[in-house]
Length: 315
Image 1 (cartoon, rainbow, N blue to C red):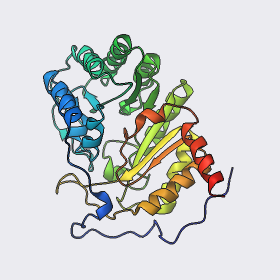
Image 2 (spheres, rainbow, N blue to C red; image 1 turned 90 degrees about the vertical axis):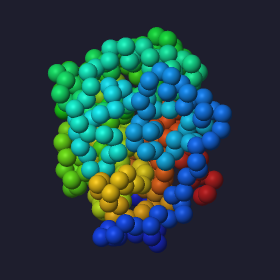
Image 3 (spheres, rainbow, N blue to C red; image 1 turned 180 degrees about the horizontal axis):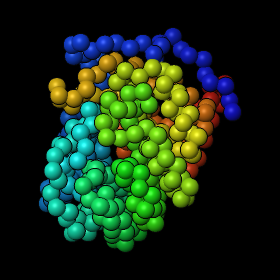
């Protein structure tokens, strides 16, 4: 294992208390969604009565991704049974499960003619199966109608129930992602009904089941540099292949405030550390979200080999 890179001039572990809303820096500016491809995806989503995390999660990359003809579909409705302090998705009593949804998602992906698709869901803790049967049926429907499309599934923790996680493994998407979201110390504050160690166990179960695994974390919630690196080491220890790191943005005044805007140089440093300690792919930047550039995350060795070439060129 290589030694960690020298910490640059901008320290990560400086925490700013957000007594008042912080002003967004210029590196967090995003383009408005425009163009024919955006309109085409918008039309498909509306016509097929589909939910996307792009909209429900207020993703800053929606214009870019939809403009390229891709979207992250959210199954099992758009009302979550959990009330995480960071998330813009509505919390409440979900509607009944729609058993026609898997086929509609598969048909939409077919009409979009995408080579890589991402599917996520709300938490459905009120269901005995946690929604895992709909998950299985959706993956199978997408694969049947779109045999050449690679698929990433961003799943909930299913409260740690192994039989429900096993359904995802049996459906065999190319990548299975489950987000840690933050470091261990503030997990209870950020993800009220979730557990840091349980999420690690979910990723470990998926890896042992033969899946290519992925997770994402938000920065700017009050974590320290040491805590971020410890989380990265924890993830490598359970075999996690892909890591995404992005800036937390407060969806509404009711959500957790941003404690600090992390500079792009710091994200670049964390990318270096991630590759140094063993991740196969690290996506790290202020506007990075779980599904950003996810088509590249499917390919084993792509990220780390590119990183090694970059280091050789700058040696």
